[in-house]
Length: 203
Image 1 (spheres, rainbow, N blue to C red):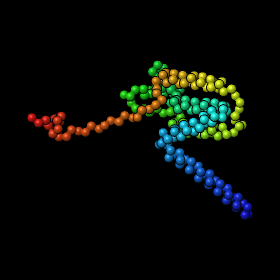
Image 2: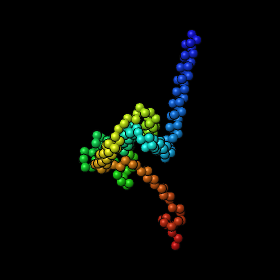
Image 3: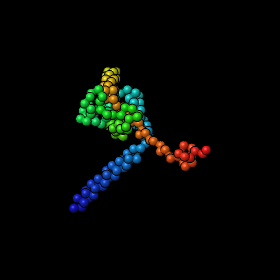
Image 4: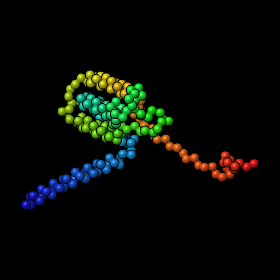
């Protein structure tokens, strides 16, 4: 009986520990949401550490290649609209005109909604870079490979993917960046007796 009580107490303690850890992690993410620059500086710092380990120790090229492919897929999802105009049932039938997406500043303001939001993009990049950095501490992931082939293949894949994405932007006439919504200053009514008000100009 005592053993069952002690085991249940220890199990409850472990559960509370992980719940508190999860709450702390989520709270940290929530506080970091408005600090976009600091978040990306941190992600860039992790990526720089990863690249330095690759160059210094001359290994883990497979890990580096896998991380690059994953980041490329995240970047493409970041540039792609949430609803693909090619499969949008509410898009216009005219293929030349494409869907109604904002292309000029004098049009009605319609924000660009991404398939992968900026915060999730940053979080995925940070997590994957941290995992890749951890993998560089284990020789099990250091598979011998001829790295120039991986570099050439990645460059080719990057060029083909970006070319297709740019063609998609041109075809459906959209930009993956949203400018701030224009703000209009309120024009105050002219004070009585001032120049420009009807019948108020002194003779």
